[in-house]
Length: 457
Image (cartoon, rainbow, N blue to C red; front, side, top):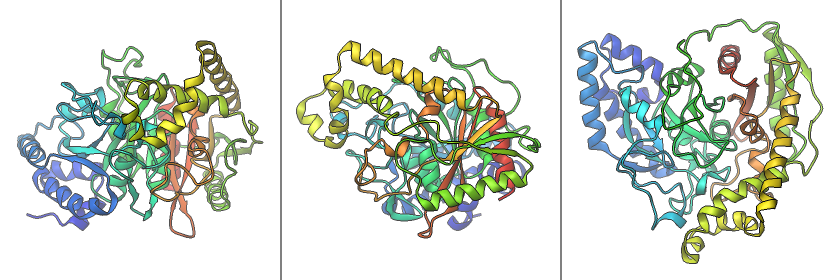
């Protein structure tokens, strides 16, 4: 039996799992369909950096045998996926999107925890996807691989830094993927590509190696059910991550039908700094809030809690990580990645005292943001205040490259779970994202609210 590429593109991981269980589909035919879609779509989108077709076929044959014997390895056995460049995958060079590391790429002899969990559960690891330079652009701009394009409009960016993963799902190459998120790198590409993107509470999904105290890994998918299914695999402990939370033994796919009537929601039309929300984003997200009211939620509109310029200590703090990495390579290497080198360069003038003061400033931002949710069950706001911009640019024209992160980075500092949901499109057909934020550790509540929102669409 041959699975048509057009049919495969529409299938979710949840549907694939059910079809494997009944024998309606085989991981072998699904993997062949995935490879066919990649061959057709990737030349237009530039989402895939490494493809291991023969290795994927071998994994698919092993998965097919497990399903035939009634012994799947896990919830994602036989589901095709691709891994983000920055995640360690045994034997595959890690460039983290930047040509500055082209001569210094790590070739891991082990898997990162999220990759290891996917492999243990029998997912088909097809290869790897693009990301922007060192994960610090809200775009698919990569000095190593070139720009990743948005399937909804290839002239536009897919967002970043999980740029290739989002483009691969939105184009139908794969149904689910793992994103990583330091300032918004799961949610912002989800918003730009019309996907579901969950940044879990800090520590929910073990990560390693970890170069930032705000970094998390989380699901990218087309549906909330698929995001929860992926979290079932990812949210298992790993001794390499000292910050990982104690495991929650209840399946994350349970409780998605929880009633949300009476839920108290704070609505933030604007955060107060960065770009003002595009009028089309303001209209679409206001309609999304009306949908929550129709579900019986109690919604209170809030004034912007911050002022222009309040984000600058956060941006300056985040410059230090890429600067420290670029300072370890030659001027020639840095010249090959001029955009990220220029953005990080101001950190070269920091003293140790400056850096500590910036850290303390981020903690002040954290405290102020946490205070906003006091008295509410959830906050909602646009995922990004801007629409997808041209794919060739590292950031929106005329703005800081950090501008795309202004509605997301605070929730990395606060360690809160936050999910981006598609809520509409611009007149040009570009997706618009709507962000639902919960209290720390209330990942289940965020998933349930997102599922109710999705069902009411």
